[in-house]
Image (cartoon, rainbow, N blue to C red; front, top):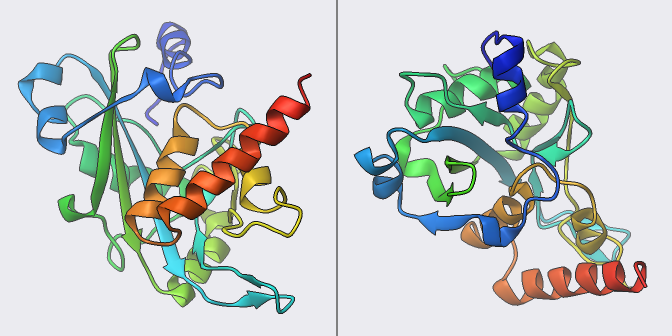
Length: 223
């Protein structure tokens, strides 16, 4: 994120907060999101890097894949990314943010328009979100994890990368449902679930079951 003043910082804090609901974000096409209709809106880009991985944990759980998320400066979970700078294309922003936040070498790995997954609009915030995703090899994924410690924004805007568990344990809660119970920035939880289905890391039924388990546990613990 570029250097900003105090007034801009207060405005920036309206984005990516905890408590945003799925209903606050409507899916729109990439073409519409980039059209003049939203030229006066604030835009943000986030990206999901992942690798397929069929390793079996304890001879019980197929890990299915590794997905890169991160702990943010505000204690919330999210994907690498942030607000699009003035005059910047959302794709340029997505690549720039991954250089800054996870130390990605764009000479080796770079997002393109074909990596676009979904776009959203939050009319209340006049905010358009662009979500990209790219499959990489497991060795590339591991190199990015190790290199994250040298990323320019590590220790300030980002506090480390994490892998969401993509399985559900025998108690029906630990694993992905428990992970979904964490605090997420903006609609990062929704982006994760869309990304898992889009790239066939989990089936729609598996995702719905994980969401149901998370919500059931949440209700029980608020009564």
